[in-house]
Length: 114
Image 1 (tube, rainbow, N blue to C red):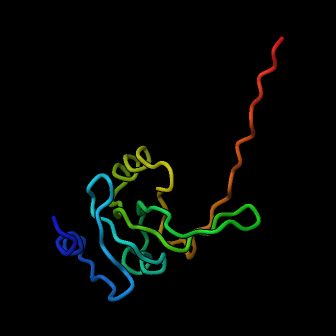
Image 2 (image 1 turned 120 degrees about the vertical axis):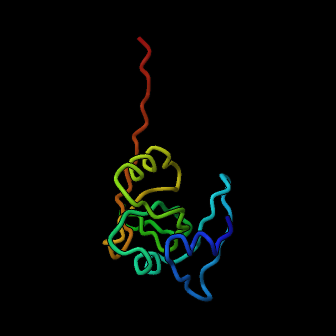
């Protein structure tokens, strides 16, 4: 399935200019775009995205640019996507104006020899 067919299947008109389609490692078609574009195209729903451009300030991760993997249509699909989310992939709801997440640092665990 080519990018235009995927966009048509979701009834999406792709923004001109600053978005581009490409295939990821699992050969799923994804779209690179700003979070504001994702929110406009897929209002009030969960989406599976990958962080492309972000910054950390004051213990918070601010994501500016994402790759849209796919919109999630129901709770079963969302749960399945949550199970496969790792690394820079995550699920977020488009009702949020910005993607801001707390950065959790895992403390090192040292073994004590008796």
